[in-house]
Every structure is written in C-alpha cells, then in structure tokens.
Image 1: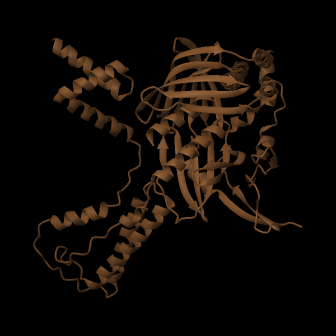
Image 2: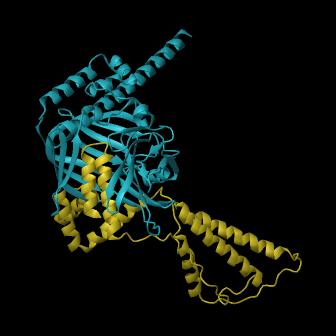
Image 3: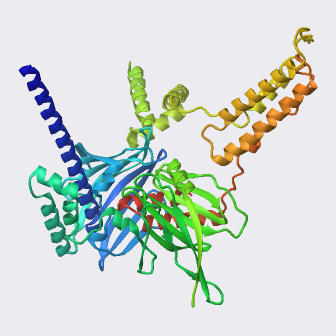
Length: 361
Length: 209
C-alpha cells in the first residue's frame, strides 16, 4: 500500500514537472519570438537568402535600414532583371510592433526545438504549432546572438512546407539608435530576469511581455482588437465579438445625410480578430481594406464596388499566400492572406453588411 | 564498375532532387545527365509517379466533370452485342417497373451528386446538383419510354454534359492582375505580422503574376 502511494506520488510529481517544463519551454519560445520581432524591425542588416515556394527557388538580397526613425526594406530578386522592391514604413515605436501574447496560446502552442546552424550562425528552433487547421505551422530558427530569424518555414496540414526561406549570408550593419537598442536590451533583460517560475507567472499574466516591449503601455489583446483605426489618425471602438467595422463616412449630395456601410464578420475563425480598417488606393480608385489577424497570420479583406457585371475568378495560391475573390451584394470581395484557402472561405462566409443612414441637422 | 558507381550516385542524387534536397550544382549536373540519358529519363518518370502516388495516398478522389461523358463515349465505341429482348416477368405487378426505374434513377443521381461535389465550392455544388437533377429527369423519362432491357446501342441518348457543374471563371485580364498586385502590396504593407517574409512574398508574387 505504502509502495503504491509512493509510486503514485512519484508519477504526480513527474507529471507536474513535465507540465511545468513544457510551460517554461512555451514561455521561452514566446520570449524568443518577441525578441525576434523587435530585432527584425530595429536592427539594420543585410544579407542574401533563398526563398522556396511551389517548387521554385528564388535568390534574393535584402537590406533593412532605419532612416529618420522609419524602416526601409529593400528586396532584390537576384535571378532576374527586375526592379528593387522597397517597403517603407512610417516612424514606429517598439510598443506598436506585433507582440505574441498569452491569448494567442488559445490557437497556437509554442515550443522550443533543438539547435540549428544557418549561414554559419547557430540558431534556436522555435515552433508555433496551430491547434486547428485554420492556419499554418510556423517554424523558425532564431539567431542566438542577434535574435534575427535566419530560417523560416510554413508547413500545411499535410505536413508539407508551403514556403521556406533561409539566409545564406547575413550581416548586421549597425544599430543606428543606440538608445533604442539599449532600451530594448534593458527591457529584454528585465523580461528575462528572475527564476523560471517567476518568469512563467509573469508571462501568464502578460507583464513580462509588456515590459519587453519597451515599457510602453500595451493593451490586452481583447482591448487592442476593439480599436479599429479609420486611417485618419482617429480610432473607432469596435465590438471584438462580432468584428464590427465602421467605414469612413461618405456624405451624400446635399449633405443632409450620410450613409456608411458597416461590415461584420460573424463568425470569424477561432483566434482571428479585426486589427485595422482603412481605405487603400487601387487601380480602380479607393477600396476598403480590413485586416484580420490571429497575431501570427493575417488576412486582408478588400471591398470594391462592382460597376461591371460580377465575375468569378479562380482562387490563386502563391506559396503560403492565398487569394480568393467573390462577389457579394454588388461588391467584389477579395481576401488575401497567408492562411489556407479554406480559412479565407470561412472568413468570406462570415461577412455581413449593414447600411446605416444618419440624418444630420 | 565505374558505370555502376555512377548510376548508384545518380540514383541517390535523383532521389535528393525529387525530395528537393539536392544542391544547386547537383541539380544542374543531374539535369544535364537526364537530358542525355534515356534510361535516366525513364527513372525520373517512375520516381515522380511513385512520389506522387505516395503524396496523394490520403488525398480525396474527385470525379471530373467529364466523367459521365467519358462513359457515354466509351459505350458508343463498344461493339453491338446480341440484342436479346427480355420479356418482363408476367407475375410482376404493374407498378413494379416504374418504381424500380425511379429508384435506380434517384440512386444514380445521388451517386453523381456525392462524387462530383467532393471538394467543390457551394457554387460548384449547386451547378452539379442541377446537372444531377437533369440526369435524374432524363433517366426517368428514359424509363417511361423504354421497356426493361432496351437496346443500349440503338437507343443512343444525348450525352449528358456536366460541363455546367464547372463554374465559369473569368480569365484574369491585365487590369485585374494589376489590381491583385496592388492588393498584395497593401496586404504586405499594412497587414504584415513579421518583417522579412511579406516583402519576399510580394517580390516572388510579382515575379509570377
């Protein structure tokens, strides 16, 4: 009897330790991924990489610099005579960068893997494993020294990679803003300080993640989701449950009333929430873009008015990027995102519209 | 001996190539070899077929829209066999024939609906359902007009085309492709959740479309 109870207690202790260590691994993975996000935006670096998708290999060079507080990323396709692709972002702060939050663990499990070596640099494998079939598995190998992702794979539900990239040459140019780096370093150190158990508790409550993000205030995910920017610097409050979006209002002729369209997504696939809404210029004029994200994977939904007879286009897949076009009540709806096509279809099926007219005095 | 060694090495490289694990140099060299060696070409075809079969082992089987047309075409080319008119059994009640005919037609329609709509969009499903309804109707009419055991070759019905089950997709024109590129760029710029991949995706998308 005594022996049985000893065995049982040993099993309970072992299971508890296993659970705790799994939790610590997950927490370490989250910290590494957040450091990676910060590093990718704040470091100046350049390198060459190989990008594989749909059985094709692309050789690219990349240069990431920060000019006047804004990011500039220049990507060049080395195999063809094509123009450089330049992506410039507006001035940013660390607090605005996407963060992996504890809430994301509802749809992903984060794991630390073994060690790897890419472009001659040791790196740590980190996995973001989806808990359903609505998103891809993401596998990173993160540089131990500078926290930059050196290798990245997106793997579908059939365990096949849909796209991969790997640096073949990587070099950190400099960190232009020493204060920024010191600040980032300081907060990373603060975030990592303490015993593993303390760290685990802090991550559970989200405090470590907030500290690691330069100390700026970060809203909890549910509150962040509720904020939808209308592109004019204002922010509209939106219902996080139904994905309510208020588009910019358009005055009718005569100016006595305004009419606007409210788009709903009900339901949205688990974990996805609206993060922004804005007008974007397209070849046909201005279209509405609503961005939906689960934190790691994002989908843009574009709405354009249909002046011509509705057409259906075949879904397009380019690596992990899927594009789905449908016609909905006089609108052409185009969904673009690095999620499976079935997820785009699910999001599309949740779209609902409400027209609201407000009389003005 | 050296030839055996060469082929052993080539086989290994071939396997690596098909698994996407061969280096750039090996790829070039192997492709040169394949161009010149007919046996190697055959081997590539065999390996690819095996790989494809293994990858599709768990994939669902979809029936193509021209499945039924193919059966009709095949039947049309079949030789005419002895035409034996089977007399209906005398003891069958008068309602037996139409009921069994209707049941057969309904079963066939159900099978086609299930088969053709596998992995199809709602629009495709709706169109194929319409096709199946047409088939059921034709089969019922055929049953009404013919006795059991009617001459299949003599009674050549119009081949039922399920082409309507394929939604009519528009061919993306230049304007639409341009718009899609602008959408991809907007997605990359405003919806990115990581730093490097969006730009890389945009570059490779622009290179392909």
